Image 1 (cartoon, rainbow, N blue to C red):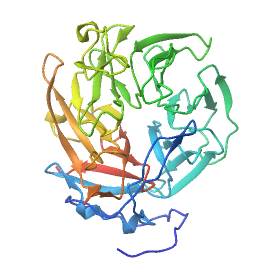
Image 2 (cartoon, helix red, strand yellow):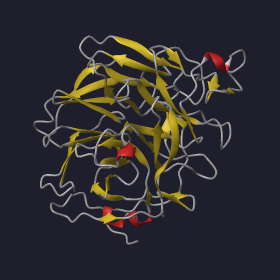
Image 3 (tube, rainbow, N blue to C red):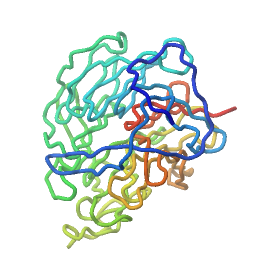
Length: 397
């Protein structure tokens, strides 16, 4: 693997690198500071400087699938959203930026990356509505007007709502509009483990027009990924379990909201059946909603999406893809992969398995999946906030 000075440009017409899958090397990540408390320890390593340095040939995919770099020079890319005209948008966390990404020549490789906004506070989450881009920036919901029509010019953000908590610990958020035009906004717990009143540890539903909010789900420690079931319309979401109980407990979770106000256990019960040693006394696991699928502890399940396209085999229709960002304090490290969840005819989980692995090898990582998005053409886009790229996954007919 060679080293070179980072190139901040995306070169028009650069050939697409398409490789089959195998495993991974080299390195990543950094320490995180949340509210003055150390929230993360690094897996010591150095991220390759450019897309040509990424060892994609070491990734392992399900049979028949291929992966390539769709866009590079997207530092700390987090949640993704795509407009009908093909323009891709990405939030970030530490970078404080929102990006517009375009493939102007139709070769399935982005040749234009524009910073639409800079200097924002953890603008991880984004969502499109009527040509505007909504951004979650800690306690505020912002809107960048007209970015779909003009995605190459910086935009001054407008404040839509500023009433969410200002605590930075688990303060980063993903966004999604529901069918009624309301924004789904998670509000994480401001701690590893604590018992705080709402809106902490909830998923909120915000009316951008009036500023009214309602609690959609409670007992949710830190959800950074959710989507609506394409048939039932039910909200499914990932949730990160607490730390400092060991390397294998408690699990992360994939959950489903059947009716507003359900309680998913935090901080009293974890994973549906594990009482918290500090807050669990007097709480019956039967009083809380169990996860639809337990995910290994500390794998950091983030973005998720239901696949509804026809570019993948029919058996993938209605499946859930999850970006498992990877652990910061687990021994051995785990996650750093994309997984696939299959549902049966009754809408219940029937299978959970790796879809892409290889960003972690020999306890070092070179990439961290942060979000997954079904693109307009049915391919799967994956944001990697460590390598600063976006991948495109396709299936060979």
